[in-house]
Amino acid sequence: MTVSTTLRDVIGLDGALPELSAGTLIMIDFQNTYRTGVMALPDADLALDAAARLLDRARAAGTPVVHVVNDGGEGTPYDIRAEIGQIASAVAPRDGEPVVVKRFPNSFHETDLLETLRRLDAGPDLVLAGFMTHMCVQFTAQGAFNLGYRPTVVGEACATRPLAGPDGTPIPAGVLHAAALTTIGDLFGRIAPRVADVPA
Image (tube, rainbow, N blue to C red; front, side, top):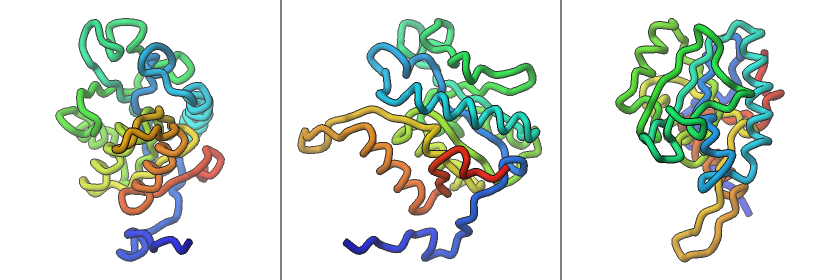
C-alpha cells in the first residue's frame, strides 16, 4: 500500500522536532480519572511513566510547564475536588507551575491557557502529552495550531481507550491512539514517538 503525502509536507511545514529547552510543556489531564473506574485506560500507567520522564527532563532543562485538568463537576469521574479528579502524584505540579482548568476537549477553549502562555512568554513550540490521545490531546494540538503555535505530541506519553466503531466493531485502544497521532501528524503538529526522541 502506498501512503499519501501529509498535508504538512504539501504545505511545506517544518518537520524537525523542537528542543525541549526551547519550548513549553503542556501536561493534559493526567488525572486519576483515567487510572481507575469507568474511564480507566489500558495503557494509562505506561503513558504516565513516560510522562514522568518527560516532565523530569523538562524541569531539568528549565522548560516552562503548564498542567491542564478537566473539571466535570462534583460526583463525576472528573471531579477535581475529589481524589478521582486529582493529577496523578507521579506528575503532580510543583510550586510555580500553573494549572489550567478546562471543560472542553480543546484546552484553549474558554480557559486561560492562552493568557498563561503569554504570561510565561512562551515561544511558538509547545510539547504536548496527556490523556486521551483521540480527544483532549488531539483537539488541544489542533487548537494550538489554529492559534499559530507549533505543537509536538509525544506519543508514548499519551493513551486512550477502546471504542466501538461506526458499525459497532471494536476499535482497540492502540489503533485509536495511532489514528489520533496520525491525524495530528497530517497537519496540526509534529509527532515524537518516544520521550527520548525529543531533543533536550
